Image 1 (spheres, rainbow, N blue to C red):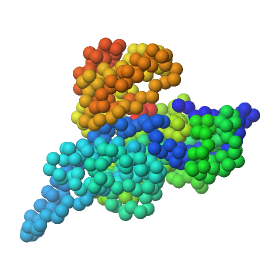
Image 2 (cartoon, helix red, strand yellow; image 1 turned 180 degrees about the horizontal axis):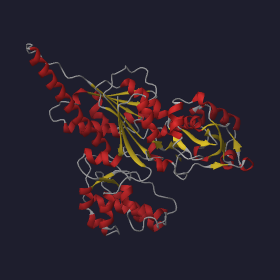
Image 3 (cartoon, one colour; image 1 turned 180 degrees about the vertical axis):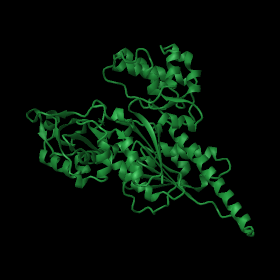
Image 4 (cartoon, one colour; image 1 turned 60 degrees about the vertical axis):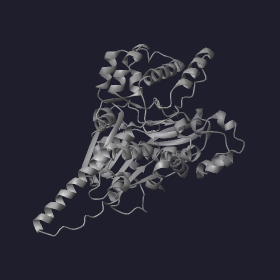
Length: 490
């Protein structure tokens, strides 16, 4: 979704702030968004971990295998050392505890499915009993909602919480963490939009205004502006919902390099980009990598970040690429993985691997996967359907898959019906939604395996899908802007 912007000041409604760099307004608005809506995140945006389990299972399988392999290597090295020194056998030390941190923990579903799957595959109790899983979030409301996930009850003795910014975890000891996971966190962290113009580097500045309609509904205007400026969540909650009604002016100003870290690295990177082409500069991501570099133990498994973006310079050079969007008023930026990787190496990360997220998930689970949204895009009529007709296709597709699909978890799919749907269509769709099984497809943002799709092909063909297109989509490379996994290790 494009950010709503106006360039004609005379056409703007009521001003509620002054021009500031986009990363500053992003942080400001996101603090307000999470403060007001931290317990209702799935109403405004969904992720691959919000209800689905496959990303979490892939991470658990990957972590288990890496830890077992590392333990085996350590044991062999210790045996060789003792043999070489002719030392007397000593009692084996207890395996060390393992701290796993999830930064930006969403609704707690990733943690719940990760720990459940890790416990299931750890038949000999070599890894799961040693794990201390720490949920980290900057917003107390979001953290409490995540900790209340019902599937975390069985893992109560394994989990802890920490209310803090991922970029500043001062209370956590250096070198004490084994694994860090962050899913769709970097796109929420402070990000500048920069470009080269006539030899200088400029960045985007924004100024917020409130729509005329919403302004008319607010009696205490000065109180609202003050609450907005100070991010007074309690006071703002008493006003009409306003986040979607903010209209932004934008302009470009020369960057104040004194306020920008890694100036030379960023400036050198921008020389690879054509003039007048905006690119995201994900400052918050860099700060989180710096903190990860401090926290990870010397032999740690490492950091995995999952987010939407690109590492392709040709895509970054495209002036039409989608740099950012808003969902429920929340800012979300594309991740410039190419520059993230450059900064990560500057910070001392020795291992940096970027791969499509679906390839990582498929490899860890030993199968090909594609998302339900990618499957829907293969339907011959998907782009010609109106809004409520697309919703009908989605529910019909889920129903067709559910005849053979079975999840190990029980979830009630959340699918609000659009207001423009005709009465007869609404009744049919509501009846179909009510019949969906709880161990079926959990969300419209879910991964499907090649085996599940093959088994359901006949039912999918009955609602218009074509076998050869689905099979081709399973092998398709990542899109220009897609979901990627960035693995980093000191």
